Image (cartoon, rainbow, N blue to C red; front, side, top):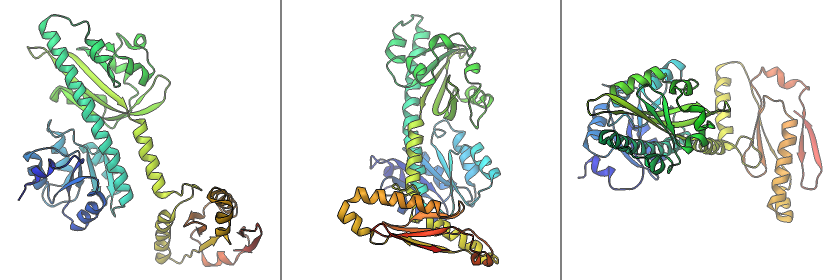
Length: 405
């Protein structure tokens, strides 16, 4: 029988370690992710740490917070305290949704949360995002390591290599900043200027603290400095600010360079703009819940919203109403004028439907020409009023029927 570490090496798929003691959660996550990722499962923190000690490291860890023995928060802290494991992104799985719990999780080192009950589209989108970011982080970490080794070699040889910046700094698309021991910027590459908007003249001989004063991160700069002092390396995701004032997400790594007598001589900062990754994943997440033709909620989101409304209805003396509206003879439009024309009709109908309901009514496109509307919670007497807008039932021939709700 093969052990878990061997399973890590059998495929080129990204590797995910799932740590959860609930069989139902494990089954849901396995069904959602096993086609695209190699999964290894542990039912406790102790078992997970044993797997991590055996061989190749996963690209991502999905970690339940509430487990017997060592809980997920403590396991995450233990991972981030180890240099060989701290780079692995951790996503917490939890039923806790209050801001204080999330704050504790992020402070422990998590990169994201998956809320219970688990929604498969959200799981796939979040995992895909952080797998992509993990690969980018591995790349810039390797580049940082290479730069560190070359600069250490140059410093210890006493023979300056004038081609170092040209060969390494200028040949990469990642932004690079070289600092001296006092955190003064002594070199940047062209990618730094392209990403940040700052020219070399703007930042040379300036303090790195001044350049980073507007960084928006859950870790303060003091915390990053403390981590560097203890580990000589820091990596993570943060929001930085361009010269124009625009905030953007980036991955950043910082390494400490020491002399042969262990004194700090330089710091190397390597970073990359991850705006496109974030925007793509946000768009994918939106498409899972939105109809691409009309921009309305799709069937899945409609049913989700309806379920929430019905729960509230059962808890108190309130009522709601659900309407299903379709376009008469819509098939005739598609068959006669084509699907492009059909889409135009769908968009126009959705526009009219928005104008025929209140802003707090939930509207969704359920299928081809079928739309659903959920009215807001209200007292039953509300529906006897005649102050609501009229709905139009549109036919393929252009006529329509009006009816009061």
